Image (cartoon, chains in turn yellow, green):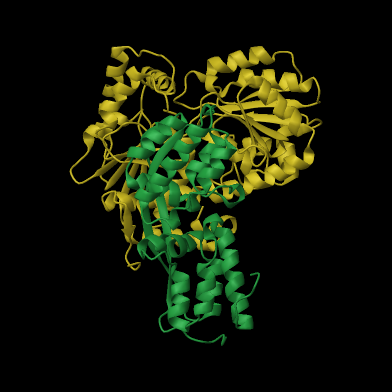
Length: 409
Length: 228
């Protein structure tokens, strides 16, 4: 995908702005490191951002660390406890986590001016920083109320970075370096978000065994407790007493998420024997299927109880759908009641808003239209690229208050 | 008004982009908010009181500053939101005065109302600062029609930089647009009308529409319109 392909979506002026911002950064070497090539929002974002950066003249690279089952089990526990679970990770697992990073560090080339480390998995790589480099820790998860033991352990690495980035102000921490805020974004031209003809979308959904004979409620997310899939089923059943509808719970797995299988089994058990509930475990590359499901949805749900940012909310809004989301994490900055969707705080609240919307088709259309424009202005990948360019300028200018670029004196 | 009248010096349009920087400081009650406002750095107050224009979506626009928006969304107190929305930082000499006005409004509110609403869970106030980056554009204007054409097509951050940030930069509470129009075309009546806009209440898109309407009317009729 080329930058010019985004002109019909965001306008020529926006792309021109990116080019002007990138001009003084030409040749800057930027390395991104994370722990999975496929599955999850981080990989999807890097997959598109890195080529766009290169087109803008930045020499951007993306490396992935490798780990065994014990490593990913530990990082999953770490992930959950940073999101608030009281999990004490055994010392031997933490030692193994560091060892795996040391092994990866020996193999990777850190030849770059700026190194961006994504999430906790590769955080200990900071020990490989060379003089003159700028290392950035990019946290994509909801770390607003971390379990102290885990955060104190991780903080010893994070505090060595030159700066950190969080997805929301509420996730920022007491750290001895500048912190930045970059909200995530979606790619409107990716297979998951690109426009699909209605007939194709319907065909894809029907091929999954989902009949489009009733209003469709769709939640797309990993099978993860924090996404509350069982709560969605309960809310759906409460709403269905009064309105005919179907529910699709579809989730992908990610290579760094061993807990997914277990939650998936719980959901299957809860939905067993109900012909209106479809539980689909999708492979990581099922982007077009997700796109089709969201486009065929009458209402998109994201009833999370913990959330980093909630890109599935953004995706649903981009498809012009009203989204009902849990009032947590980044969902609260995307959904504004009656304008871009509805925030809910309980299963009952979710059921109420499903009923409320199903009985107001005109409001659904209005909210959906408004939600799409909101995403266009705030949460597309072009804005993510812009924020990174601004960050690079800020780093190179010593994190100052105001920066006057050449030609703007 | 001669449409082709040339400016002595062209107007160079510049963009102003910000990257937000959370401080890690939050307030989960009105009293906590007051405590932080009393002591936090000036650039944090500046960010929340002046730079909201760059961050808030026009379709969700209600109050111009972050404290008023929080009072409405976080505390669900319309009364406090209205009072805080009326603290216009552009009428004040410096951030210190803005800070004092906020303190006065909140203290009055705490004194007057027995019941202080709790913060909605998940809607705590998170203090931020920002780094501003001034970016040159390739766009210049030498005539008023060229100016209007450029203004209609530019990003909204151009309007923020030349109309809002300029008041702090120039320390005269003046915007770059009216200054250029007055200095280059001698149109003090148009410049004066632009300076009288109650801009504090406008979103950047609203302001673009307002400015274009005023200047285009002037170019066509040679005078300031009554209801433009």
